[in-house]
Length: 422
Image 1 (tube, rainbow, N blue to C red):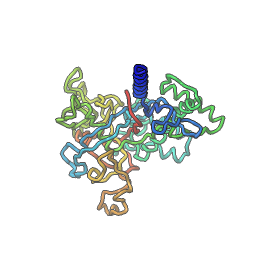
Image 2: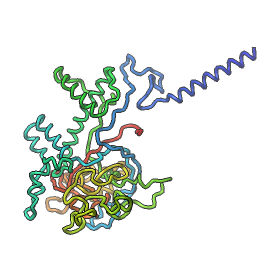
Image 3: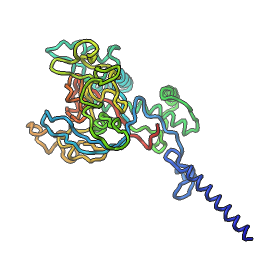
Image 4: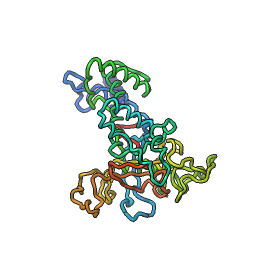
């Protein structure tokens, strides 16, 4: 009897260990939450209508690069030549996010204009048009750029310019809707039990177009809920902190531990503007103005290849895999400009929004006694017409949100939802 009791206890222990091992191996995750609640034991997707379905994460939007979050020293590492003292150094942390690999190019913006012309009013289309007159100068012959730069095929992959902060935000909203079309199609199919395995993003787009044609004839389809997992986060401009963090790319300085002997002046190692070694030693790392009247250097191999802008991806990417985070064109960021932003904002996901804490109505901007204005926005990164000083990620400038120049473009960003696996 005692032997039988011992055997029974041993058997029960084996079963319990197996169950424990099994539960450890099948622990719930955000993507695979399991069939029952780990807290109540109640079944998901039952008669009570509470849905917690498994799903396969959709790919991030096209051209987006995952930027792993972390802490870094934000602020200017260069001498304050403008004497503004508006970017003191301090340590902050940034959550992981996605950012466009390149600046938005002319062909991408023309795609947007085509959609706007078809689906929106003439008034909105006129507001969406870039200001091509930003190229015009009474004392320069830039007239050809006024008519050719935006629309000529030879400039298709050059960064779009003449776009205001407001227009850049409108583009982000349209891109969210355009890319969501493919995701909503895939999500609706998944919700209906139809699986489309192995579809690339481009194929999903074609499938979505076909589904949209059918849906148009059948009437409006119900909107997918956020809980479905198939609602894409909105595209937006990167925050100033995100842009600076992504440009600095300090992940490239991490070796065996968290110690960092030096920060970076530019989005690459060292203080030089040229490739320090290798087959391309001596070639330029960015498109910028070297000095008064010198936009490219002497013709030949040491020339930076661009008098004005240059095609996206013409210069090496930084350690985050992002192109032209310094030079080519400066880029709009989301933040409103405040001289003391870096002293006021939170040290986690720093961001300065308008209409908060120091509203513009409280300041004497009419008599030019204050720079505080809810319509001033930050731009960063330096351009083809800037000297190297402005290529340092910590430098910052500002401009009215409805203004545009031939030196400022933009790229989009997006939050990262959940965990990320390569």
